[in-house]
Length: 220
Image (cartoon, rainbow, N blue to C red; front, side, top):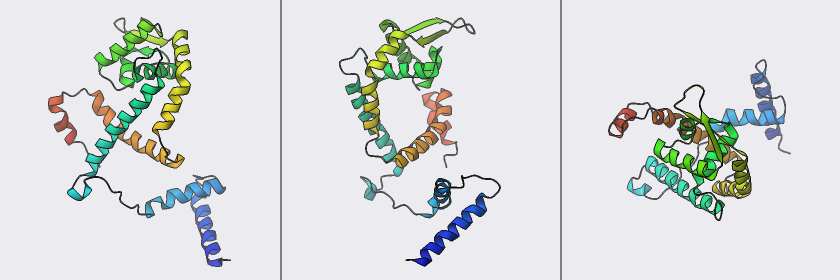
């Protein structure tokens, strides 16, 4: 039996109990101890730098990230096309808009378009398709008579439910062979990127000025 290892583990447990005293940031059990270990030591393990195409010729990490994000979007669209094949849906945006209406309830057309991070002309085309299909209802907004409130109706819910098994299968395939921990880490990183970009996107800065204005933002 490795008594030195046992002693080291007991020392860690003692450190855990000492740090957790009073504030109770972690549960006093094995799960709490494991979470404390991850938080305390994850920065101490140096990860091996990944390799990528063109690295030896000076290709930057930023270039690789941009390319891979574009590729992932194309892969996801391919699976989405399969999920709506032989259905009444025209594009993946159609069912994404319906899913948002089902999840978040009635909202103005512009709020729905912004939630999907799309420009107004493209978003209005999608909404008009949903109205034409009879999947959403619209009415005047009480706050702003110029705006229309839309919500998913029974026919839209039925159309969505008929495709949900395939849609779920498509979303599962997109995440590939990532472990549960890797999925959570990817969510954290993508949320961080989204939190950075969304406020900039919502400012609707003119394309002629966008790069210069964003360049002044602290990106580290």
